[in-house]
Each structure stands twice: as structure tokens, then as C-alpha cells.
Image (tube, rainbow, N blue to C red; front, side, top):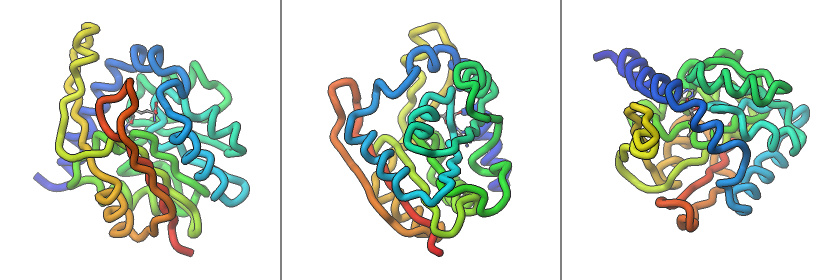
Length: 220
Ligand SMILES: C[S@@+](CC[C@H](N)C(=O)[O-])C[C@H]1O[C@@H](n2cnc3c(N)ncnc32)[C@H](O)[C@@H]1O
């Protein structure tokens, strides 16, 4: 199987799953309730690093819950997500932000289009073999000197995360690919970026896994 075929198959599975759970996800996570203050501090730091006009792509925006936060930090936000169902909810619930269907592996943006790319738990379904191509694509659309933020569950291995949705009668197959901050930083460096900041923290009471946030810069 060619790498491009493999990408397409993996993305089809994720797209189909999020189309199915879009309303359940959007209703359960309307804003930033799951985030801890330290997570939000990393987002504030990311926004503070951006050059004007602070154009930000919310890459894998889902139903758009993080876009008002970014706008409140002075960013001009647009969203992209693989799932039509998630984009339908983003457009319905966050009408002030442009959002459209698109893939992290083939972003519908020209080179050096934005000051920052914000990927909040949107590379978590990307297999390790496909991560280099995704990070190269994120680097392509950010301006030289611009920043990329990744947030993800920290760990290793592949975990099936369909259970909570199946309990609600939603028949999906969804897998999460955990990696450590070290793994993510190594992949970002290999994609031609440099590390700016990282957070790796223990799970909070409502979480089962450790969490990580990494901020990287595209060199000038
Ligand atoms: C866990 S949700 C997070 C959504 C949102 N960032 C949030 O925090 O609520 C993961 C999202 O990433 C999107 N996603 C996963 N892989 C993607 C890809 N290759 N291209 C675009 N979006 C992707 C999914 O469709 C889903 O909406």
C-alpha cells in the first residue's frame, strides 16, 4: 500500500467516527471545562508568542470549542477539521469563526499563511508513521518565525477509545496514538522546527492519562 493510500484509509476511519459522534462530542465539550489552568496557561503563552495579526489556524478544530478562547487572546482564528459533522457543529455553535472541512495532511492553505497553528488533541489519531507528513504540512502553512502548538495524551502505544461512545449507542471505531513530549519534540525537530516550550503533567482526577503540550517555532 502506498503511503498516500494508507493516510487516506486512516483518515477515513477518523472522519467516519467523528461524523457519528459529532453531536455527542459537541454537547459534552462545549467550552474549556476539561482543561486545567496550567493547560490554559500554555495556550496563553502560545498566543503571546505570535506576531501580529496573530492569524491562527485551529487545525482539527472539532466543534470549535477552543476558537472563542483563542479569539479572546487576540487571535484571528479559522478552523479546519476532517469531519463534516464536527464542522457543521462548529458553524452552528461558533458562527463568528470561519471553519471548513480539511485534512491535517493536506491543508487548504497557501504556504506561510498563518502566524500560528493550534492543534489541540487533533494529532492523537495520527499513527506514528503518518506524523512526519502531518508536521511537515503544519510547518508549511506557518510563517517563518511562526509557532505550532500540539496537545495530546502523553504515553505510548495505541488505545481503543470507542468505549465511551459505544456505551451511548454510537457505533464507532476510534483509536488513539499516544506519544511522549520527547517523541513529539523529536518529530517536530525532524520536520524542521525548534522547541520553544513543553508541558507534561500527571492526569487530573477526571483523566486516565498524562497530558502534554508542546510549542515549536518554524525558524526564520
Ligand atoms: C479529540 S477531537 C479534538 C477537537 C478539538 N480540537 C477540541 O479540543 O475539542 C479530535 C479532532 O481532530 C480531528 N482530526 C483528527 N485527525 C485529523 C486530520 N488528519 N485532519 C483534520 N482533522 C483531524 C477530528 O475530526 C476531531 O474533530
